[in-house]
Length: 186
Image (cartoon, rainbow, N blue to C red; front, top):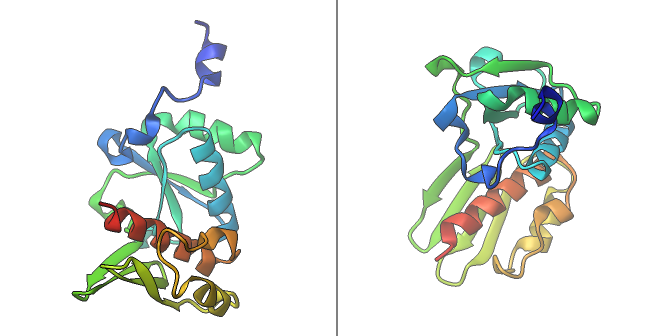
């Protein structure tokens, strides 16, 4: 196999099972949230194991979100982004505890209820029925609409927030929704 084939190849089968931090992580820093959302979608579609995180304080600039990725895959990841004319402001290796990205999730167990916070959005579910009882947080104009569409629905019947909202709040609520589904799965 020549060098061109090596550089064109996509990640090996089942890369999503890999943890970025298990092999050394890097952080992609972008100008705005739209770029982060677009980059995450492109990289996941290409099969790269990436996750959206909060930026460490030492590198905060531009957006309130970063993408963590396996540093060994830097060239391939950047190639996928460049093909779609999307370039990060900075690519930072996580080589210090101070550069660790921050989890976007906080979970609070209230007994009968479980609340997941992702960035600035909160989603609360009645654990026994899996019914969404509250959506709160954020300051985006679509938050009341998202709350109206989700409250009263179960995790199985609720529409995905990403299909309804197109703001940072809608994106954060989607992350909270996915995390809630993960935490409430049997």
